[in-house]
Image 1 (cartoon, rainbow, N blue to C red):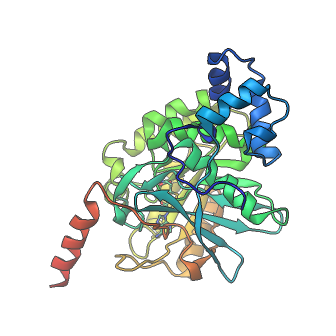
Image 2: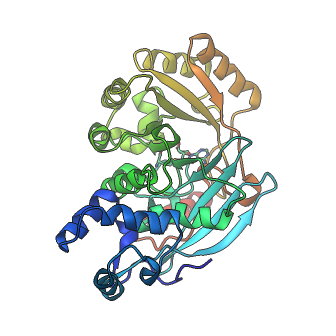
Length: 370
Ligand code: SAH
């Protein structure tokens, strides 16, 4: 790889931190014409040039300024693991003892990159291994778009990333500005040009941010639902105590109604004897009655010390049939990259936990063991 492998958090201005709007403002502030923004985007993302001296359509004085004050640095891949099904997991360095993970999932007609938005996660969903690690900080725009940039470079011409899902480590809507700028960059014609249908943000349900999203960034939305009543969701996805189902469903309806053919994809992890009964399926149908929906059932992926078991395939199919008969498009997510711990909820990286949550959880689990 040809980019410089230093920390992305340099003293200089890292141009990977700007979307097109940000770059225009940056160049106009310098007294330059706004089209410098698209010229720079093309050099970086389409020509693969990060050396300002090689950017021949910029004036000499601008190149000198950029050399002195700016830089273009993507995060560094530390480790690559390839699963037997071709799923590739990269451990990406984020400095000061932190590492995040991104995952590439190749399919016949598309290639999906699962991107992280935070180092760890501040939420405490009980079935997710990222949650057990606590939280360090939000990723910058450079660190988010950088995951796509280094991944595509690593894959080369052989495989193209056609889809991005913000389903890696972290809650993307709690890092709103940086995630929005990074997603807008992914969809920019001068970078990767991904269509809005191929960029998906997944959220545990940060309702105020869901209301704000469409005005600034029009992407597909997935909501991690996992329960059809507040009592159970309060337990599995504790942010539900703050933003209960009624508010969440209103936000979903509003987002789906903002565009033609729009729908919300609801993710529902299948936990044995917890949320997989016939009654649960019927409650889900009722809950989603007035929301244009698709449902993605996710077989639970276990991790060390997890408290749950995955529902059997018979139970998952029974659940699916009830939804299907009620007219809801339902798919069962194929588990990918299991042998390298790259599946949903298994991403851990390395988090210097500032929230001290991992210590509390360790104390609870050792108290339970004695
Ligand atoms: N915080 C965001 C982004 C994470 S996306 C969100 O909650 O949507 C990752 C998806 O995998 C979410 O739907 C999450 O609930 C689900 N998930 C987490 N842990 C899992 C596990 N152990 N097995 C299966 N799915 C899991």
